[in-house]
Image (cartoon, rainbow, N blue to C red; front, side):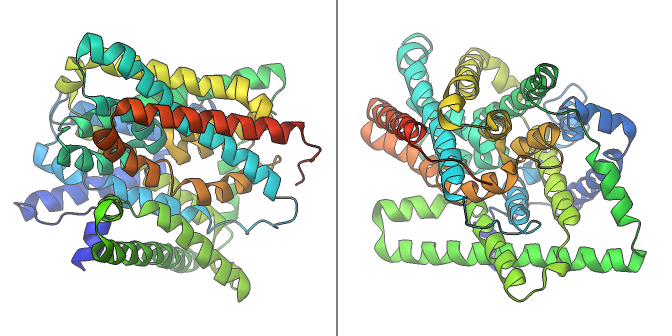
Length: 460
């Protein structure tokens, strides 16, 4: 049991059970308010413009947190919430593949490959531009730690969950401010993804890149009201059980890797000891979905419930992560954060408007906007932007993105490369790591250009 809690980054050795009860009680209240509030017309209209209700809840928790102007939430509560991002992000990835059919392999390889190349470019490019700006600007003029070169990818690609995980790794190698700075970058990334992404979609509707907005929640409510309350409750329990199976599969893989790491030792053990469970939960969701299809039991899973559980988990992740944000530290390092944020955002926008024309022959906006959201405000933000741009999945981008995530999520966004980066910088130096990321970025662009000039046609 201890190994499972450690894998989920849950620490139950709290000083007071009272604060533990309070923390969970407030979390339940937030969950109820978020679930109900998202159904109001005002919330739907805000989402139309790319402003999720989670952002409002997160801002409220920040204002009420121990470092906010109205500190009603005790720091003992937010210290407990610091442990929540990884379990909540694990739930997000456990639902990603469960709710939709596994796409046919026919004609899928090239679209997935081009989507993966785009994701790799944004990920390695964030390390590249982050390393360059730290080496040329932040270290000479502000004297920052070289590990700052990791913060764009950790905060933007990884989000609050990866920032919480990597914060512990940063602290172990002497970068004690890494947790708060990573969470700050994640917050900036979420805000950027929300406002800039929604602005791009609105502009895209104006110029004809995307079709008009469609209210996806209306259809959900119609379908849910067609079944009885007892059937709804039964369906919720079954779907939660399926998510639990996906998480357990991910935990099993992770504990197996850690067992092997203990036997092998060295760098491999250093990596797997801090490797998070959520990339493997995505693999678990695929395996559970495969078994449901194999034994013709797909009626047990509800696409609507899986999507709602994933969205709620994301909302709670944002709310709990923002509550304990160390505002005095952010004000102290505002110059560094601002420079890194502008650098990372500029690179991601470069990807949309320059590299997407190389990587995608068609449906470029939908396929790049989901990657912009993923690379700026984590996968859930990317999926939200895609639903705003393509609510009925006309472009079939979501299944391509989901399959791509199976390969890239274990590498970037809190995966293997994210875990290795600070170890590599500490061992070989920031210049070496930045040079490696530059070579990988050039390699990815070269492969994409080769594919672009080949005669293949994307099929769906």
